[in-house]
Image 1 (spheres, rainbow, N blue to C red):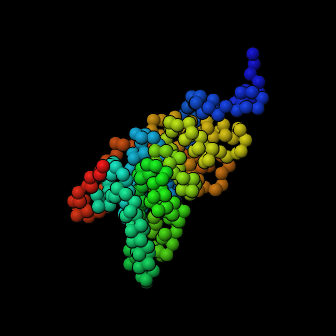
Image 2: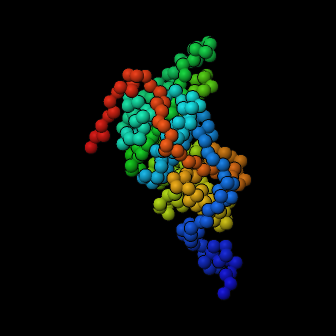
Image 3: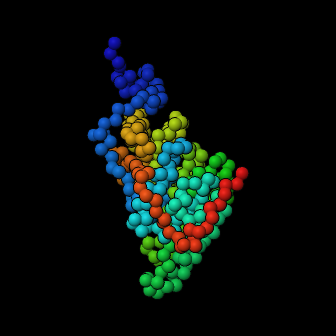
Length: 293
């Protein structure tokens, strides 16, 4: 019996669409198909960019972030990198312990120091005397429950919405605050936060609801069923093409006529040697803080 046109289009009846059928059906990945997409590199993060990285546990979030840090360090982009993490793990050979914090209470002080530098640079006549201040803030799994976003005083949402304006008074054209927010789940981060991300990087998410949230909100080009089907196929194609590969959605790109205009893939090389991003000898002598239970 020949399938009906509706069945060929993914419908299981005259007017019913089964979303799980197109998501769960394995995608045949060919080199020609994945070659349509370009590789994402750290220099594609816009100045004062907000990067949202999401993946389940042990799916390469930290390795991907370290790759971004290594590439940015080679380009001499950031003068300082701060880590805010409940685990304080994975960055020991990159960021001095004195720049690592296990809660967000120190974050407002870091931002204020950046603003102080900007105000000072405004008083400097010769640009050669500017104090360099290009900061990368890494918030790694700082949100274990949505209520923690509210308990933190909304600092994450304020950063997501207004972070790109923190350096507006700094005349140094290289000054910036780049935010990298890392989470194990899309839905742990409120829409008010993730909708302000310039870059969204996601691995193969285990939960159907997580995938649906990401795909329907950030990958659909058109409103019809075929557009949603194409978005699902694109997500599957990229995330299944290689172990630990991330799909990258450049939401800050406004002119989107096809997925190749704003969708990329990202890989990390865990064999690359670690590098100290910044810090004095005294900074590196600081003892790593213990995790408190």
